[in-house]
Length: 183
Image (cartoon, rainbow, N blue to C red; front, side):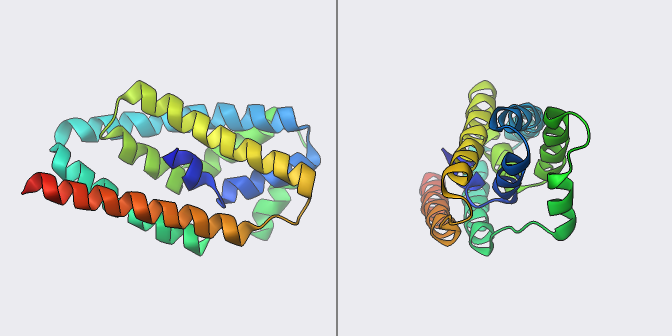
């Protein structure tokens, strides 16, 4: 759920919308799935390693602060640069390979990758990997479907504010919970 929320209003959703105007939806979704599976495997490995090194109370506090940061990041929003738009609309090569490469590179260091690292420090690695991958793919599938149905009239602002509010609530809850556990 956290990764689904992190993906709402993210740059990769904008990329998914752009790719869906050029390629078949199933090709875009397959490329997103492959890229997400790879990036989130790396994210979970990083998070699992950190989880073994740090006490769980500190991890929960760090996770809460990170989620508050994700709320602020989500409020700021993401926008495609002209260069990113141009790359997303190219038709060179296999559509699946183009989408996979673009999403893999776009997700490195993105908030969904960082959120996955954060979750993996505190939860089962396999469940985190599967859940984060499914959450991101579903969020991008929603973007593709909504883009196909509604065109360019998406309420991006409402989605961004709602996702930011949920991140803030979850972040605040994690911070308070970890501070109570340390008392």
